[in-house]
Amino acid sequence: MHLSFSLNPHANIMEQGNPKSPVALIVGVTGMVGVALTEALKKSTTLGGPWTVYGVSRRPLPTWFPSSLLDNYLILDTLNQENTHQLLSPLSSQITHLFWVAISVNQSEDLNISLNSTMLSNVLNALTSSENSKLRHVTLQTGTKQYMGPIFDPTLSAQLVPHDPPFMEDYSRIPFPNFYYDLEDIVASYPKSFTYSIHRSSIIFGASSRSFINALLMLSVYALVCKRENYPFRY
Image (cartoon, rainbow, N blue to C red; front, side, top):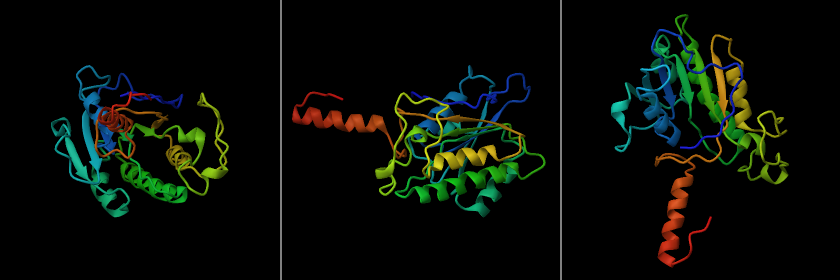
């Protein structure tokens, strides 16, 4: 898996020197990044380990997922505030690190903002609701739409004037609705009891049939078409 990322300069993801083993909650665990994170955190050489890893997704684990690597798995629709609080608030005294790699993709950017913001807020509220909350760090994955704007919104995309690549982390926000901005603002709005980092990934290669965008699968299908039609494989 390849990730390009942007980090909050005040973040300390693994918090070296803490004698207690970290407990990760990966929301969106069955996506490409979720699978890779689960495998990475369970390696004996991973900084801060041994990690305890809890995973969340909306459906049962697929058969191909390495379920033995998860210490706990929760089927949860994080849009449901009541269920999210019921399932996650009892874990708030255990979870030390939240990895947010979930996404709801919709045609309208306003709907993207509404749904994705609700999901993240519900989870953060549940994990910080208790005085015994152990949450120390939030890792938020967004993407290069940070610098391009709502390119998939059929109405807004025609009006965009995106930043020119190569993209710089300190570029100003584009003056259009963008759910990435809202997610960053939600994390930053919480009391400074935890640190956070923002990871703006570009093209991600990985193995998951549940990811909305999968460049590896796209290239694989293209290669099969080229092979069948006897075309050169160019990209």
